[in-house]
Length: 203
Image 1 (cartoon, rainbow, N blue to C red):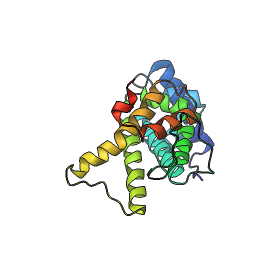
Image 2 (image 1 turned 30 degrees about the vertical axis):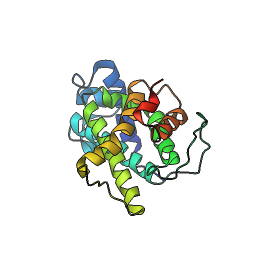
Image 3 (image 1 turned 135 degrees about the vertical axis):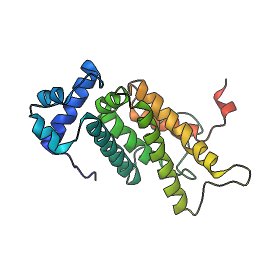
């Protein structure tokens, strides 16, 4: 379960951040704008955050922490969407389909926030934090089965990048497209992509 850190006031400030980022942009918003939109005074804002940059950073850190926790402790199994005759199981996959699905559902359910963050001048940090989470999960799951990201012919730093980059790219594209497709569809795409060579994607 996610540990809900947010008080009602922090939730109101988060909603104000989303509204104002969409309405006037992060650079133009002020603490006074945030306080007014959240129906609090500036003093109350400053009991939680030092400035709007601290607010943005804390909101992103909390979301990434929740996403990590969700994907490390996936819920009950869900049936996969059928995409073709080569439907695969989780055997050999470091991040399970259910963990992917839970993480994607979390992003979809809080899309307004993730979209606001990506438009607040923090899009590359969001991308990198997402990739860091995926890399961390891959390493944790690899360690459980006694594996390491290591090959004699490829330095480990590149192996880690290869493991995480394609998965991150699919999630990032989905987010930038407005999370239009259902999480189940994206989880299935990722699940299928892990078994396909690049040439298999050509027709």
